[in-house]
Structure formats: structure tokens, C-alpha cells
View 1 (cartoon, rainbow, N blue to C red):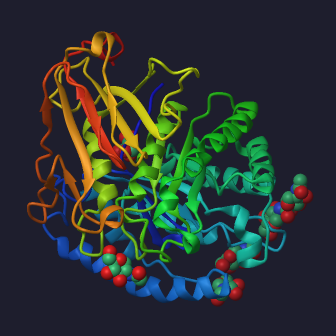
View 2 (view 1 turned 45 degrees about the vertical axis):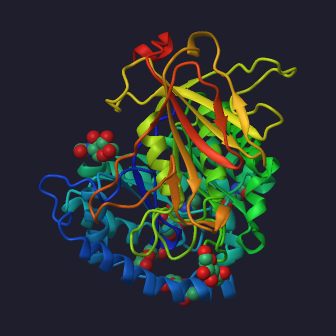
Length: 461
Ligand SMILES: *[C@@H]1O[C@H](CO)[C@@H](O)[C@H](O)[C@H]1NC(C)=O
Ligand SMILES: *[C@@H]1O[C@H](CO)[C@@H](O)[C@H](O)[C@H]1NC(C)=O
Ligand SMILES: *[C@@H]1O[C@H](CO)[C@@H](O)[C@H](O)[C@H]1NC(C)=O
Ligand SMILES: *[C@@H]1O[C@H](CO)[C@@H](O)[C@H](O)[C@H]1NC(C)=O
Ligand SMILES: *[C@@H]1O[C@H](CO)[C@@H](O)[C@H](O)[C@H]1NC(C)=O
Ligand SMILES: *[C@@H]1O[C@H](CO)[C@@H](O)[C@H](O)[C@H]1NC(C)=O
């Protein structure tokens, strides 16, 4: 199975919340890029957005309805430049709430935006709306699956008329957690527009932000909620369009992003790393993290662009983990092991081929990543072809006195921080001598590259 994690930036949620999949964002100075040398522009964009958004979101949370916001051409320019300069691909969710009296989508506003961005030759992929299952609550007007499907077909024909976008990618329907009514919406949509979209998308937020406690992040039942969802969505998608790609188009620890102080802590990393492992092992190619930066606490970098624990976790993942998932066999277990679910589910072990982009490791190396939710350390002995190989350890632990609440991390005992605004620190492994037992400290996340295994599955693309 293959998990393909590339960089995506999504503009969605009333066209204002940014989401980004993990990558060395904004630090990747590209040739001919206008803003890479001007981080001030990004700061300005962020401050502008934060100031506007804070009030709007407070109001929305209070009244539980959407507010109207205007996205100007200048904001779109800045956003596009930001994405482009960071080597990200932008996915733009058009406003689906402009509707005709017969409830069909009124595309006239979207068309002006498409024409403008085409005139600028912006390479953008598209979506229509965000969590359509919530429209009844939020605007008192529901849109069913077949109507939304027709709207997507209408959008596809619009795109085809515009040369720049005649082959642009279109993703949807961007539904929320697959409860019963949401699944009905998905079915209706798939019947009509399953073949129109390039990937079927849904979103998942693990916890209601208002009730989160730090110990919530240690609950194995919570970590497992995603598995059933994936199966539900796959079932419907495979009924109508077998083999169609499915993406987790938005994921975060908590909904109501601004309500708690925990989803940017070390503890939230357990959910994030487990999400990446589960999705990969269940064949989901792309996951979009909500969000790269925002006003709340689900983000990867803080208001000053300092990386938070999930950023470091993502960076390690990106550097060490390749797309191919390997099966794990744990000796001495009664139950048939599944990837990521071993030893009473509190010790989760995933294995992939090591990223072929990482030139420190030759093809054929493998990377294990391990989540230890036990309050005691665990020992793992590598067997078979993995025995007697040198292992590089990347152990991430909280840094400072806040423990699991910490917003800083240490890698193999060294605190991680940016060298300067544009330079990431070196991520130094700790080499373990061949044959050594891996000792996994309590409540930690770690990566282990088993060098030079020459694993057949990992030798070729
Ligand atoms: C937003 O704009 C639409 C169309 O102009 C209007 O129908 C709606 O009432 C407005 N909503 C709010 C909350 O202002
Ligand atoms: C669609 O919206 C535009 C602008 O909001 C309006 O001028 C036009 O009449 C609408 N079209 C229909 C068919 O209602
Ligand atoms: C709904 O209304 C729009 C705009 O008035 C029109 O173009 C469309 O054909 C109508 N759709 C149906 C199914 O009547
Ligand atoms: C637009 O971006 C996508 C995704 O990165 C890429 O695959 C495609 O080649 C790009 N298209 C053009 C015309 O550059
Ligand atoms: C879906 O909504 C449209 C427009 O509101 C309506 O015409 C249609 O009958 C609905 N379809 C179903 C299956 O409910
Ligand atoms: C959030 O946590 C920090 C320490 O990590 C603390 O200083 C701050 O007061 C907390 N804020 C809230 C709203 O709980």
C-alpha cells in the first residue's frame, strides 16, 4: 500500500482558514519567488487574517451561523504567493452557499474568481463548499447529496470552459464525520458525481474542543475512531466508483479550534502520528492537516511561526517515512497482529520503507515508528533480517517542565528550535549498536531507521 503525503494548502471554512499538509513550509526558498525573501508579507497576511477572523469566529461560535466575508483579489494574490513560494499546492474551496431559488448552486460569483485567477495563471485545484452536512444548522438551508452532485458537475463544466483549469483537479464532497445522515449525503453525491471528482474527501476532528483534557489524548478508543470511518467511506466509494482515491481532507485533534490549550501540546502528537500510521496502513493516500497556522490551537506553527510539537513530528515523518507500508509481526502475541495495533493497543508500531528522498539512508532501509502510551518503558527486540543491523534512533520527548502539556520538544535529548527564520535545525539521530534492544520510554513517540536491511520491498519504487 502506498501513502503519498505531499504538500497541500487548502483554503476553506468560509474561505478563510488555511490548512496545510506537512512539509518544510515557507522555508523552501524557490527561484523567482517574490515573497520568500520577505517574511514580513506572510506575517502581514497572518495578522490581517487573525484580526478579521478572531471577531468573525467569536460571533459565529456564539450565533452558530456563518458570517459573510469578502475575499479580495489582493488577499488571493498574497495567499497564492505564500503557497507558491513555499512549494505548496493550493486547493481552493469555492462558496457553495450562493444558491438559486430552486436550490441549485449560483456559480456567478465563483466564475469571477475563476476568471481572475486564470488571468493570473494560478495553478489551483478546486472544491465546492465545506462540510455540506452542516448547512442546515448554519444557514438554515440544506443541500442534499444529489443536488450537491449536480453542483459539482456544473463546476466541472465551468472549469472545462476556462483553458487554465480545463484539466484542474476537483475534490469533494468534503463531508464531516460519517454519521448516518452524512453517509446518506455521500451516497447521493457519489451516485451523481462520483466520477466527476478526482478524489473523494471527508474530514475528521477527534474531540469536541470544549471537553478536551490532556489524558483524552492517551485513550486508545479515541485513537481508533478513524479506522471504522475509513471502512465506512471506502464501502460507499467502492460501490459507486471502485478504486477512486479517498483523501482525509481535514484532520485535527479538536473541533472548535480556538477552545482549548491542548491540541498544540506534545500530547496531541499521539493522535497525529497515529492518524498518519492508520491512514497509510488502510490505503488512504493523502491527509490534509487542519491547520498549518490559524488563530486556534490545532496549528503546526504558532503566531510567530515557531514550530510546535506536531510540526517537528511531521518533519521527522516527512524525512524518514516513505510511502510503502510494511506488515509487522510481533512474536509472542496470541492475536493476529495488524499494523499499529499490538500489545494491547497501547504500544503501536508502524513500519514503512525509509523515504527514498533521504540521502542519509540507502534504498532498502526501513523505518519503524512507535507510539508508547504505557506509563512504563517498553523493550523491543528486532528479529530476523532486522537483527544485527545498526539502528538510528529519533526519540521525541517533551521539553521543559510542562510534561505532556509542553509546546517544545527534544530530539534524543536536544531541544528543537529554528536556527534562524529560514533554517531548520539538523535532525541528528542517535546510532544504536547492532543488535541492541530498543528501549521505548513511557508516553513517547519515536522513529527508528533500521539501516542497510536491503529489504526487497523497499529496494525499488
Ligand atoms: C450574507 O450574504 C447573503 C447574500 O448576499 C445574504 O443573503 C445573507 O443574509 C448574508 N448573511 C449574513 C449573516 O449577513
Ligand atoms: C446569481 O447571483 C448573481 C449575483 O449574486 C445574480 O445577479 C443572479 O441573478 C443570480 N442568478 C440567478 C439565476 O438567480
Ligand atoms: C434552477 O434555477 C436555475 C437558475 O434559475 C436554472 O438555471 C436551472 O435550470 C434550474 N434548475 C432546475 C432543475 O430547474
Ligand atoms: C499544477 O500543480 C499540480 C500539483 O502540484 C501539478 O501536478 C501540475 O503539474 C501543475 N500544473 C501546471 C500546469 O503547472
Ligand atoms: C434534493 O434536493 C433537490 C433540490 O432541493 C430536490 O429537487 C430533490 O428532490 C432532492 N432529492 C432527494 C433525493 O431528496
Ligand atoms: C495555556 O497554557 C500555557 C502554558 O502552556 C499557560 O501559560 C496559559 O495560561 C494557558 N492558557 C489557557 C487559556 O489556559
